Length: 216
Image 1 (tube, rainbow, N blue to C red):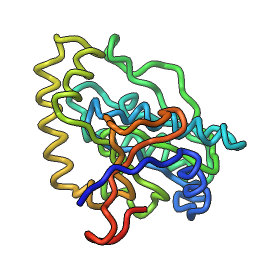
Image 2 (image 1 turned 135 degrees about the horizontal axis):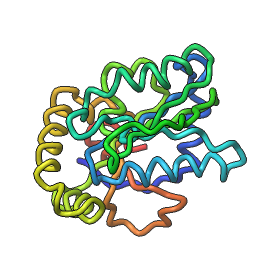
Image 3 (image 1 turned 135 degrees about the vertical axis):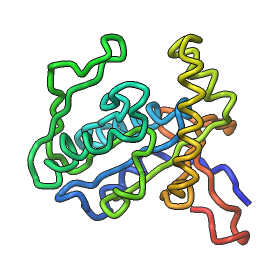
């Protein structure tokens, strides 16, 4: 049986730093999940926790910045590989041009991605099967579909509803085919009901001890 477990971001930081570097000398962390689940918030708070525990804030790449519009939902990966993962894997700084959803083109300025002990990549399909051998930690952030839809509409406006419904269908198909939830290291509740300090703690889905393993 699944249960909710409150954990500290600081503990997750220690877990990452104790893990092996598999992307060259870098520990790659993937924060995956459907749109509106709370991936961006979780990834930001995790990055800030590295600094709060006395280390450097790791670079954080959001895959939404690499999408060439709505039709590039899952096919952006070659761009991420060429601009970010490939260079970092080789021990060289990477960099990417951020896509402007207003101008509908990639901007000219390059956002640098330094070689660092930890790199966080956040976005739909960030923990896809192709990159799993190089991940030090993977998380899937989830939330009820109705809440995710309302969050997305509040952020982007009702005009995106047709594209959003198509996007959600693509997400569901990807996660089912990829087996993401079964493969990630932890599943994070993006709409937790347990009381906690959200800046320092997060809520994950675990298993009740004795049901099928132990929660931890």
